View 1 (cartoon, helix red, strand yellow):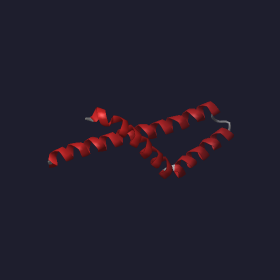
View 2: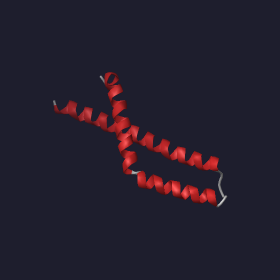
View 3: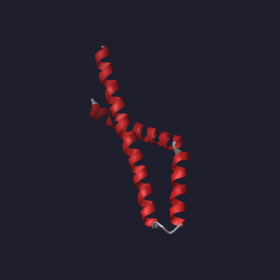
View 4: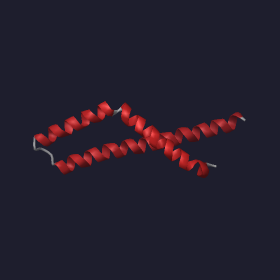
Length: 83
């Protein structure tokens, strides 16, 4: 059943990820501000700044995907026990 639901789960993960990005936009802007300060001080390269930003975004996406799937699986398990 989970294989059949996988496309819908993946779509919902994208939606949840977008919502999380909206909710954390202020934190992301703060990160960018700090990274620009580092860049302007010439203490860190633009390439390294871009890598740091990409890791931050990737980490967020991995967390959302894992958390959503864990919550979904928990819901399926609880639902099966209620029958």
